[in-house]
Image 1: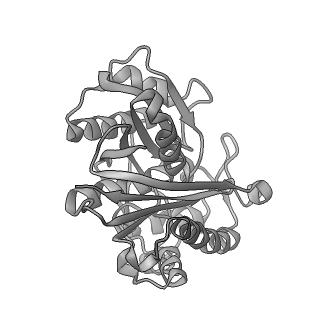
Image 2 (image 1 turned 180 degrees about the vertical axis):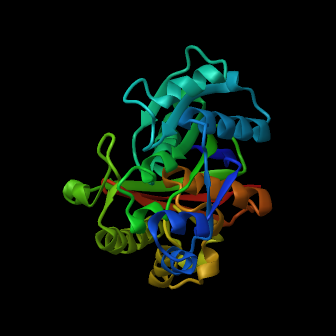
Length: 310
């Protein structure tokens, strides 16, 4: 059994408006809102993925009131690391003062933080406190020339973190499922030093099918219905996609926490940033289930079901 103990997040200070992004790619600010639900995003000008991840890690550990030395493992998901190797996980550990704690990088866009949470829930009985981090500097990707209008407007920078432990916490992880399909690998990919390539129609179509199915499967396996879920914490890819998933499940759009308006799509950081904000404003309530869900390049997708405990 594993528990969610705390969340944390960090957003860079620079706010980039739709007017600024629209001027870069030749589109109207209102058009960006209509196609994505995004009004602004954050860019990290000088900060690196390691900087963002470390700040989110420190926020999470501080809120949990535990020391970095209490960690047994670090898992870090990112699709925008600045170099091939070593990955950012070990660098974050070093920043936290750790020199022998095992670190694992998950080079996965959008779905990486959920995959990290699932892995942590399985490994917590062996490694104890596991810190899962999702950190992205997508601005370094989308600002590469040639900039594509339908891609560049979507993304922002930030980091989120989640502390998973084996003994106790405000929420118990009930069940999870993760899946992958490489048949669509070319529809959403990022080559080294190249612009991001995305077939938007295919991505939205597959995401709008696979996310509801994953959620329905995890709920069915545990005798739950979508209407019983207190809140859905989903990867913040596109507001229109969130609405589609809600409709597919037959639940109100308000059941899906959304902060994409302020931050844009922060890839593997987005779900954890959303969870951290939700935690601080509402948080887990005893006996009420919460469902996490993601979809990303690969394609990779999945869902995780947790429940508040007394």
